[in-house]
Image (cartoon, rainbow, N blue to C red; front, top):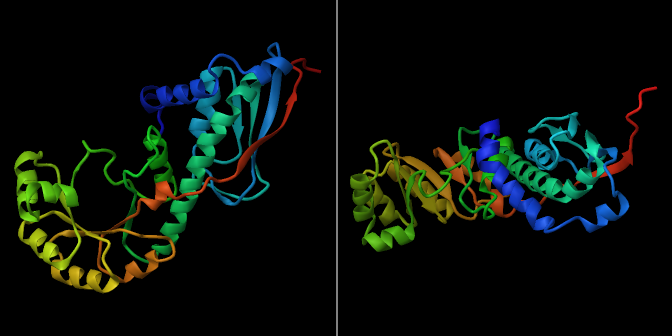
Amino acid sequence: MFDLITLKLNADPLILNALAEDITSEDVSTNSVVPNETLGEVDLISKADGIICGLPIFQRVFYLLDNKTQFHFFVKDGDSISHGQTLGRITGDMRVLLSGERTALNYLQRMSGIATYTNAFVRELQDSAITLLDSRKTTPNNRIFEKYAVKIGGGQNHRYNLSDGVLLKDNHIGAAGSVTKAVHSARAYAPRVRKIEVEVENLQMVKEAIEAKADIIMLDNMSYEQLQEAVALIHKKAEIEISGNITKDNIHRLTKLDVQYVSSGALTHSANILDLSLKNLHPISTVKK
């Protein structure tokens, strides 16, 4: 998850770029109404039902602006939340709370939306042994956040990037000349510890992938009847992944098939944000009575 090393090395540069995008020189609105450091407090409120995700990143946004900012969360990543629920309270310089608000909420809303959407898929698979996987169809420069959100929602990550595994898709096969040539070339080139996965689109390609001894065969954009035939052909000769036009409305039908994985790019590219808000900002006194 987001340990301190991961935050510093991988997340912080991206968060700082997001902040720099939003504040090129100064926050004119904030500086005009809060010209000096003023201690304040604001509530994090949910405006929808869902799964909360991204609290470490939300927190990091304000921390990078001012490491004296304090947080009191009433929930943790992965918790179910409801409309109108107070999720936490943030205390710090009001200039920091105002300037970091949009960036922090952008991350939190996006990540919570993905976690919530993923969880809806997972619930449809709960009576099966199928593992739900994401894809590389992520927002540029936000993959680390979006793939984390999939895991918080109950899914699992497919390869993180092109260096992380061998997946021979249609254009790789076209470049190699055939499924057999692509699999054999990958077997000769890739490290021994790598599994070789190949994407197939018809039963002839399934047979070729089996004969080439692919480790994982991805059945892409097949009809349900084709999937049934393909699964019967493979029958434990390789692991099976189903992909292509998988939605939360049609995924349940796949639970009747003997497959190990179902992958969906929709988890990251089609999830709506979860509506969250920072409300009730007010100054507070540091004088103890």
